[in-house]
Length: 423
Image 1 (cartoon, rainbow, N blue to C red):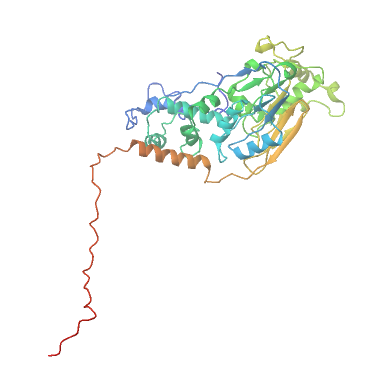
Image 2 (cartoon, rainbow, N blue to C red; image 1 turned 90 degrees about the vertical axis):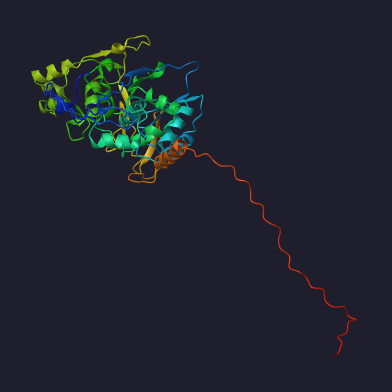
C-alpha cells in the first residue's frame, strides 16, 4: 500500500518513522508484562486492513427503501428515535450506515447491537476502525494482559499504533463489546456499492479520491479524507479544497448523461485549473496545460453491469459522513450526512428513492464523562475482579440456638383470709 501523508496515515507504528534509516541499531530494552508477553510482540502487531469494497446484492425482493444514516457516534437513543421517525420496517427497508457508529457518545455498544439486530449494512469509519484494531490487538498479542500491563506499554511507548490510548474510550468499547457485535462491526468494508436501480451510488465514510477508480482507492483515504491538497488527500480541512468539490468538478461536465468511471491518474485539483481559466469566457479560454490536465481525468459513460469487475463499475454519486466540521452537505452528486449528532446537532437519514431527508435532534455529549460505555466498563472490571478472586474454603458453622428466655419467679400473694397475727 502506498504510504500516505503523515496527517492521514494513522495505522502506522508509533515509531516507524523514527526507526527508518537506523539500520541495525535498535533499542535492546523491552518491556515484559506480568503474563510474559514481550512488548516487542505488541509493538510489531498489525491489524488486517478492512476490505476495500463490498458489492451488495438484494436477496429475494428488493427493499422498498434504502435508509442511509449519518455518523451515530454512540447515540443509541437518537438512533432509535430516528428509526421511529422514518417509520423503519424491518424486512421491507434496508438501513445503510455511513460509519462511525461508536465513540464519543454515551452508548456505543447499544448502537452496534441495534444495528446488528436490524441487519443494517455499513462502512467502516475511522473511529470504528480504531475500535476494531484495539479489539484485534486484545484478542492477539495482548490477550490476557491486564490493564496495568497495557498502561505500562503505553507509558513506554510500546503500543502498536500512534492513536492507541487507554483513556480515549476506544479501548473501553473494544474490551467490553460482545464477540458477536465485534465480529459484525469488524466485517464492515471501506466502501459499499449498491445493486440494481441504485448502482450509480457508492457509500464511503470520509470520501473518495476523484482521480482513482474504485478498485484503486485506498481504505485509509476513504475512511479519513476531507480535502484534496497539492500533496494529495488530507484529513485536514485547511489543505486544498473539499474532496466533494473536486469530485463535483471531475464529474460535473458529464451532467445527467449517466454514471461514470473515474480512472485517470492525475492528482491535480480543479483549484489549479481555475487559475488558468477566464471566469467570464469559461473553458474556451483554457490554456494548453489546463486542457491536458483535464484530459488526464478519463471519463467513460456506459451502463453498469452487475458482473463487471471493480475497475469497470460505473458510479458517480457518493454518500458519506465524517466531516462534522462542515455539518450536513447535500449537493447534486454528493450527500454528506454527518450533522454533528454527538455535538448537539442532529442525526440525519437520507432516503432513496425520493432523496428525502429526515432528522432528529441530539443532545450534546461532547466532553461528558458519565457515559454508559464507561459505566459498563467499570461494571465489567468489577465482575471480572470478583470472578478472579480466589475463593476461601468456608468452615461449616452450626447456627446458634438462642437459650430459652429466663422467666422471673412469681410470688403468690397471701390468701385473703390470712390475717396477720398480732404479737
